[in-house]
Length: 621
Image (cartoon, rainbow, N blue to C red; front, top):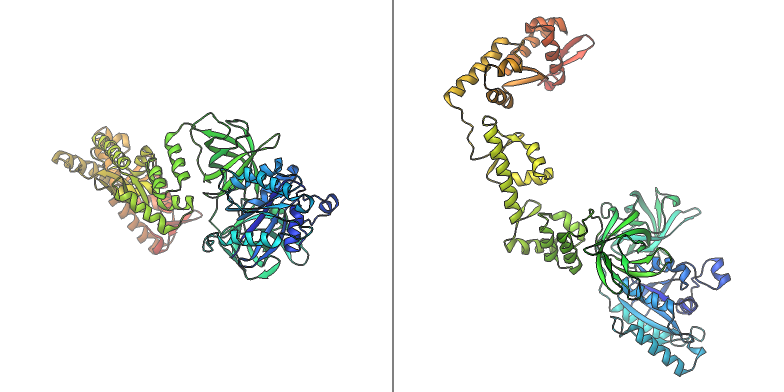
C-alpha cells in the first residue's frame, strides 16, 4: 500500500538522526543543513516495513523559523512520528507540532522518545508521562510510545512494528479518484528536464497522462515517473512521487501548485471553512490577516467571519477566507492558519466550499448550508442547499467531490420526502418552485392584459424579470404545463388570442394598406393614426409585416414577389445595379436602398462593388 509517515517534534530532538537509523538515508541534503546540524527544508526517505511494505518518510524541520516548511510536508501524511527527546521532554515546538498534526487530521500517531541512552530509566518514564499528558483527551491518547536510541539502535524494531501496525490499520486508499499531487519541490535535471516532487494524495498517475498544473491552469504531460527513487510506469495515492513533465518550465511552477486531471480543480480567491481556534491563541477578530497552509500551499488571506464578529480562543466558527492570490482546494481539505506577525499557529480546520460566492455576514441560509457541509451527511447537505431555491445536481456533486451513485441516492431520499422536485439536472425546492410559477403567471397575466393581441411576452424579457439563469429558466418553462413557448415568446396556456370579427376586419385593412403600397410602405405613424396599434404590432409579431430596417416594414407577400422578380431579372440580364433593382421593385431610392441591404444581409443577394448578384441557391432565404 502507498502511505506516508511524517516526523514532528521540537528542534534538536533527533528527528533526522532517527530517520537515518530507520532508513539509512541522511535527509539533510543541503550544505547549510549539514554545516549547522539543523534541518531547514523537507527531507525524504523510503521506509521498508515487514507487513506494510515500502512507505514514504518525510522529515520536517523542528525549528520554529522553518515551520512553514514543516507545514508544507504535513498535508499528505497518514501516520505522524512525533519525536520527543528523553533529555528535554515536551517542549514548545512539540506542542505546536502536535496541534498541527491534530488540525491536519493525521489519521494515526506514534511517539518516539529519542536519546534514551542519555538518561536513566526513571527520567525516560517521566518524559513518557509528560507525553501522555499532552495526548490526553485527544483522539491520540492511546497512541503507542516507544523509547529508542538512534545512536545505539535500541528500540528501532519495536518502533518499526508500531509504525507497521499503524499503517495496516488505515483504510485502503481510493485509487480510482482523480489524481492530485501538491508540489513541494521543483527543479531541473540535466538531460531530463523539469521535475516536480510531492505526495500523491489521491488517485493514480500513469506515464503519458495529460495533466494540468493549478492555479495557473498549465497543461502538461508525464514523461517519466519515479516512486521512492525507482522508475515506475504508474504512481498510486500515498506514494512519494517525482514526475518528469513536458511543456512546462521550472519557472512556471512553485511549491504549493497542484497537479491534477483536467477539470477536477478550480482556482479561487475564496474558501468557505469551518475554523477551530487553539485555546492558547488570541481572540480572532473579523478581517484579520493570516497565513493559510493547505497541502503544500502557503497563501495570505483575510478572515471574513460569518455569523459572528469574532471567534473566542478554543472556539469554532464559519469563516470565508479571502485569499490574496489564487489557490486550489477541495471540499474536506484540512488547513492550518498562522498569525501574520508575529507568526504563531492560531488554529485550523476544514474547507467546506472551495469556490464560493461572497456572503453576507449574517446570512442564515448560508450558515445552515455550511453547517450541513460540516456534518458530511449528503441528504442534509442537499436539503440545506435547497433552501436557496434550487440545486444543480452535477454542480453540487462536483463541489463536494463525492461518488455519483452515493450522491444520486441522497437526491432520491430528498425528493421522496416531498420537499423537492427534480426537473432534468436541477432539484427545485417545491415551495420555491410554486412561488416562481405564481410570479411567472402574474407577470404574463399582466402582459396579456396590456397586450391582448400579442402572441406572448418576449422570453428573454421574462427571464430577466424572473432573475433566472437561461438553462434553469428553459427547464422551468418546459416542465410547467401552464406556460406555452411559441418561438421566442411565452404565453399563458389558458389565454386565448382569438380576434373579434371587427378586429379581423381591421387587421385585413392594415394588411391591404401595406399590400397596396408595395415597396413604398406606410410609416408606423401613418398606420397607428388610422388603425389599432395592437393589431399593427401583432402583424409584426406574426411575421406578416417584415422589418426591413429601422422604420421600414414590408408585407411578406410583397417581399416574396419582389424576390421572385429579382431572380428573373438576374437570370435574364446578370448582376443588377441599384437603379435596376429600384425599377424592378417600382419604388424610390429611399426604399430601394434598405430593401437591397436587407436582401444582402439575409444572404439572398451578394454585393460585388456596385452590382448585386444572387447568392448560391442553398444560401438564399
